[in-house]
Image 1 (cartoon, rainbow, N blue to C red):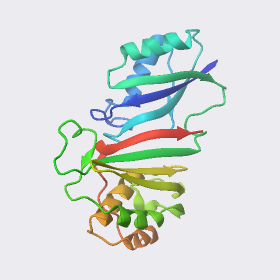
Image 2 (image 1 turned 90 degrees about the vertical axis):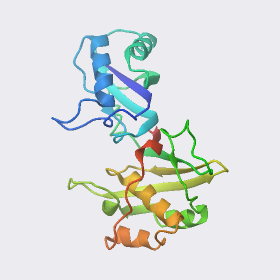
Image 3 (image 1 turned 60 degrees about the vertical axis):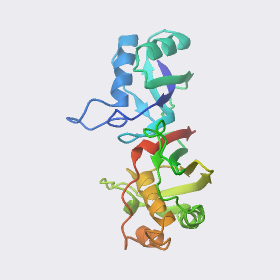
Image 4 (image 1 turned 90 degrees about the horizontal axis):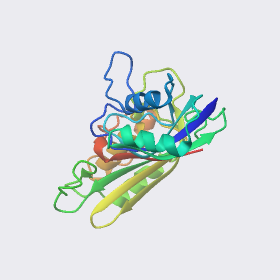
Length: 243
């Protein structure tokens, strides 16, 4: 049996995330992919992904894999899928990998980037893909606060997680870039809890705009304070999954 690895780019604007629970919306990225893969192979397939992106979140480099007995060449698979998938989902790379490869279980690090426009006039053309900050955040304040998050911590308070699994994760790096028109926050971690990256960025933005002090980060990690509201998902991108 062949194990096929997909690298996927998508605009998450009109989808209900990568996948939803039973009985919930079927308008998901995974359902669109599975429909096309099953028509292409003539088989029922199970699709595994590296990171289950949330409603409205985009991806530059999502990774997924499925197994098949079909003998279609890789280049023909890629052409077929890109022809029949919606135009806001694209297969940028397709490779055959060892049978034991699993897009989720073998992931070592995940990289998210959050885009914000910060110039005085909101961009008409970026409005669907970047959050606009009318009050430019202080990069210095956000850098100071972000340093408190780097390392291994219990991030339960920075999530909407419901399961009883471990909530200890390790943030490897938080990098903040700015120029005249845009700011970007990049977070690299071994894994993320549900909504963790959005709650972290929402809190960093409140600290950067002076709504709350950086010391609140320690309080949130200790469970004695609450994070800010999650950031707008339209500026969030899954940039890369590292194996």
